[in-house]
Image (cartoon, rainbow, N blue to C red):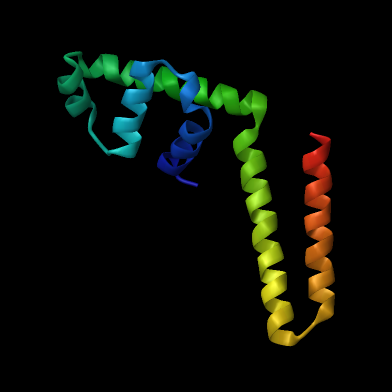
Length: 117
């Protein structure tokens, strides 16, 4: 996954834990593709100040992910759900009940894991 997509995911999950200025800088830089200079001009600060704030914000978001692992868990579940969808498509094409059984088992395991957490 590229850095922009990764930061967008981290921001979606943990962005509310940043300061107002950090949220703005991350959103403008990664979400709206503004340059450091454009952000600096809008906030009447130096490019270096924007850069430093972005690096601190990225570290904070990464630290939250290291401790909480919400994005990893989300991506793992999404991968499993894609596999379930594939199995269900396969069962529709082949008329195979075996694929449906596998899909149901995967969903049951996912639900068991979710209820334990």
